[in-house]
Length: 256
Length: 359
Image 1 (spheres, rainbow over the protein chains, first blue to last red):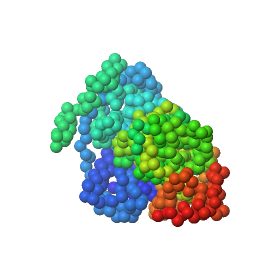
Image 2: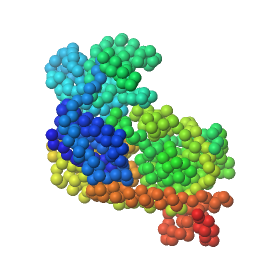
Image 3: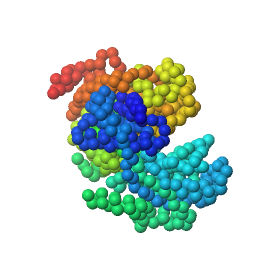
Image 4: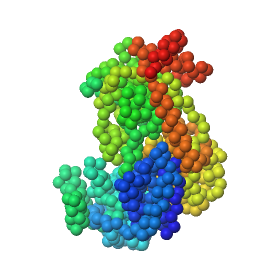
């Protein structure tokens, strides 16, 4: 695995492991990220503000008044070796409800037409796959997930939307995502997920974490509305969609 | 401190929001730093108001902000090259920026217009807002910080007070720097043709109307990609210059998305981000390349200048004599500040008295 250290101005640098979407690159990124966190916990890497893991690189944000590129890189070198031997971190398993019907699915018909399959096949393929949360970014809590089944791969929309409704479940290239917030967006919208992905009041504001696995469960429009109402009133806790085994692990961690 | 006093927003102008030093540590879940676009203005304004340098402030674009004291006196301080007006029972009076003023109950302060740049920062004594994820900075997209996560609008009220009761002024405001915006090539300079970086630094670019807290879209000679105008999404940083397929650069700022799939030809250095964000639509700019180390050296030099500016802040004399006037009239020979029309210079012996009373 070749590693490049790229300049990102005078206050950040990016350590790049490759330029593909590939779980083995992600494992290296996460291993380096974990090694950096350990080093910081030991009092090292002074001046480092935060790190941002992505599909294939780790960006380090630092205070140029407190440290320098050379000092940081020197301290990082030994940590890079460990990254090459990284193994995927164990993630949690989620089963998130998605309505693939009507106005919740504005691009479903067009996607089916473009791919030459039926709408039902698109839904079955999309909901029949376990996705890895590669990274969070773009918007707070926005999960980049993959990989899509080969049959569902298509480029972004030629005309990006100015407004993608919050909760939209979307696909583009080999990836799928949920837009947690209204925003512009160029992906194809296949459905809507009622579960809020971000809540600043929680200790961990993002529902999903990099390394988690997500499976989508189709629900009808009525059920979607019922879930949405339950979430709004507080009767439904978003963590009910965490897989039972994973929930036990989380409870054990919280108890520790 | 009067805990019952409030600052009411009478008009927000083009865009105003509560900002502070920003929200660190959450980029990994997609939360940008937000925070003041020009942290130097924030720090100076807070020092003028007698606040901690990183306290929440009001950042406003293009003038038009008007605020009023309600329920008691409120001290406010303005940093930025702005024309300021205070309206009270005795009528209106013009005021230079780079000073604080204590508004009596019912009095209001208005940023009439910007004399240069786009950004003015108004610090408010005793402005206490809850930190959301470590910061009071408003990030509207996710409804974080500020007042209910929203940009400021007429009718909103901020908790405020008169602070320590001492008004202060900055004798000599920072000089405008019209030099090129410094950039460090990368992280994806290699995704562009050899000519592209040359073009970026040789040609003139212009700020378009699409310029806000997220970023500044520029127009100028096209920057050609070597291959596809697409990368596997990676982290953006404040200052990233991303170039989509149309070859026109976009500089990302404090509220920008934390990851992106356009190649980034270069990054604006931290010391020049505030200056870039303050450029008005239609204004021209040039870029010059530096190394990351040179960028850090510039950052340290700028920090030294900011410290010196803050250190030079002086209390206003009790009888209302403006120390800034004295300094600008007597110590800055030949240099006429853009606000000079608002000053009424006093005899030089006042200046001598004031200088001798400095600690």
